View 1 (cartoon, one colour):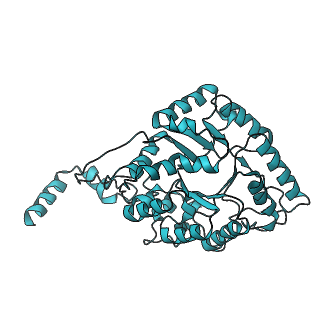
View 2 (spheres, helix red, strand yellow; view 1 turned 180 degrees about the vertical axis):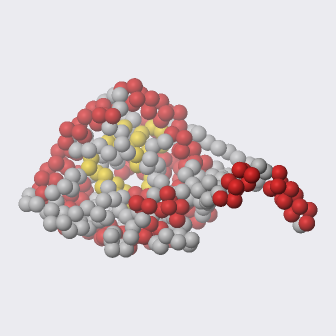
View 3 (tube, helix red, strand yellow; view 1 turned 60 degrees about the vertical axis):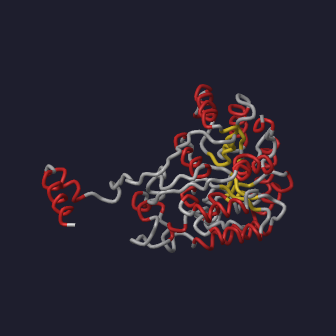
Length: 367
């Protein structure tokens, strides 16, 4: 112990004053420890099986040239992504332009979801107009509906009142999706830590420090559990509609609760976009959960960055230990591989999506 202390003092004394000052004032945001653990490593840049990314955004014809779309498909090929679901398809003419630009240029590689325009909800005839537009969008080629988190959070109606997720004015929209056989991918609320005090006990402290607008202050937003309760009420009221509950329903840290909800609601499935860090810190529990519910969980990423898919492949496919997540402010901890069996991987990567989202070609995944 004495020898180590002497060495440490010698090392610090040998540092230039500026470097020592930097160390003394370094914050947690700057702390990037390099693990000294020596264990087998199997980094992956390509999925074992072709997969569908059911949760992606911001691919719009207005902002992407043909060359950029071709480059995107080349990236998809490199990582074995067969289909990407663009949840930001828009509606009306915007939707048609997006479908034409992506799906017509690369048939079989893109799926486009439509979106509901909630502006004006509460005005006379809004529900009827929204239902008619949704029916037209699905006839034009949309293969699902994406609902953003503003519903239930801060979306207001024409009278300035918050619109809850289970607002009865929206019921005909959920019902139409069930009637036409298209799924609803719905994001409600945010990580529960965004509602907790911003103190030293909050796992999301760093994220909230770097992004203070993500804090859900009491009184400014409805409680986390209230939003989830409204969402689950919609699932119960519309058993004939398939709902893809985004981000593990923000219950990735309590897989027992998520499992009980799935047992109760057979029309609800989920996906792992932006929450792989939850599964990777509980590899045994997560593997057991995914083996039990392999037909109810889909592959998704959320933000499209090709380099970040590697962490998903490594977490799902390998038995690696203690490797980093790609975005520290989401998760300060390291991850462990689940080493999932092939039947679970196939179900998550493509079989569930083929069953739930209409119009995809199975032969593209099995050749």
